[in-house]
Image 1 (tube, helix red, strand yellow):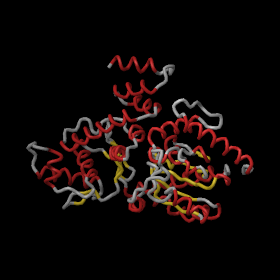
Image 2 (cartoon, rainbow, N blue to C red):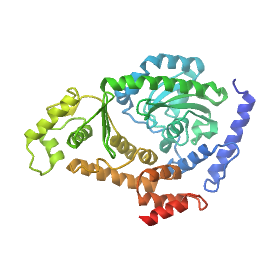
Image 3 (cartoon, one colour):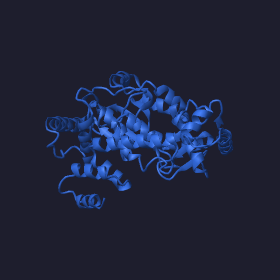
Image 4 (cartoon, rainbow, N blue to C red):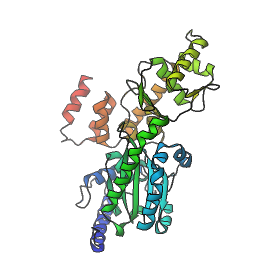
Length: 398
């Protein structure tokens, strides 16, 4: 049942007051009556990351090519007309974003076109929390559940006229978050059915992902104990084969035989013929999905270490820590992989010291033995937090 306009106006006024109060004294701000703890925590993170001058989301010009190559596009294609019709009839803007919160596709009713353009709620718009502050897309991705963000719950004031409903697209096979669906309109049209609709579309898109992954998808999970899947099937590969796949994933444009040899073996006395034999065996495992001259993978690749690198490159430190479980192929001595491992590790150290969200750090420190994370977490947690003694003990035990 829709909310009355008077009830919505009253709620908006209270939120605007709380938002303004928070902006005057963010450090001392306690939990306002109208603001949930999740939103307040997001405001605090946003205050530390988002410039005061930010009025619109940054834009990534490569979004169109990313959308064309994305499994999300193929999964969502049967539903795009329906999404567009819903947006048109409901006075909405509908959007699909990737797992980082970057918008890949949008469709807006005429009343929302100008509003969406003004805040860059368009393909390429980066709606992660670090870029544009508290919003439904980033919260749905971070909490991995459907979320509504109403009016001044948004951190950036230019979106206070909006209400947004977002739901994550979770791959039912791997459990990984593949993207997000968002439906947005003006605050005075807030309706609880909006969240249900966003969640329904997210679930329907997710249901099609395994079928597409089985067609031509190579997945490399190599942060820690390696797992490689091709077309939905787990492959039993040697360490050397996994290293070759990682090197090819790092170089989508391809590598010459000599370059691949140098990155894999360094100065070791291994013949080019041996490397050719390794590639031939690997090509058979991948149903011919490795080209030569140059050597390159011919199927879409999803690699966990590349996702972490992407998050680090965008300065999304919380995302990087949330998706980093262990070192890149810790037993590998391949020169290029060792170099990449140290590069990622250095980025994670930077992410730890730049992270302002204690809960993200807590989850990270629970998975990874990292003394710097423990120190940073102790600096962030309140003095009466019951987790402090455990962290202090772990730090002392080294």
